[in-house]
Image (cartoon, rainbow, N blue to C red; front, side, top):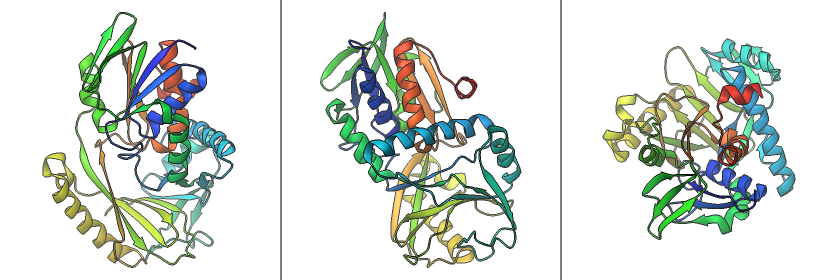
Length: 349
């Protein structure tokens, strides 16, 4: 695709994955990032949960493709990027996830009490859980180093403040002026909705505040990642985020973390709720040693959507880190071939 010029807006993990795939194809790519560092907003932090366990066979299949993509990245860097400690799911949707994994041919086990070798930091462990044997902790720092090295010459640290479709392409406005491209991919996280609106693309505009908290644990503790969605009480995701660190994110009352509440008030409410949960439900010292803030789009769940207007593509979703390799390849191909991918189309291909 020599001679094709594509703009990518947003240098999070998805934007950098798109950019690296475009460069690999031979296209010219320019990645705009408004902050001073790549993967510094929604992709920030040192770790994420990887899992195949999703609620639909289509998403399980995409996660399997993403795992293969992470494998290719691992071959390139010569080191493991996912610590395969496993991921356990407990709560109301275990049966639904198991059904989706069964349909997609993904390996899993249903474990009932006593849980045996599946150790968790719970005061009262769940009676039943799904054990995703392919799950684990993603090494975000290593992926950041790999992708930034691949895309270093393509990233421009400027805000994009306007987009416009042109015949056969699109124009991007930034502080440096306007630049014309054959295609544009908007992967700007919280900034996607206002930019995409310039070319008539609707993506969910509502935002909420979210904070993940880390607590000290014994360095020898090797618990699997844990996603818990009980019938009553706080839903959480939990995982080891480094030696001696256990990270917990919780589902806080939406009214307390809504965008209009403000970051500081939302962070205080989140801290109070998560600390209360840790004190009551976990065998973890209730002392916060780290906080990771990000913005979220309420009610999106897992997965992603891609929308197109002319030569502009916009991608949005939640929890996209675990799908980043496959989303990057898909969006790069869509920018070059003019098609609009979807989860359903990809699962069927």
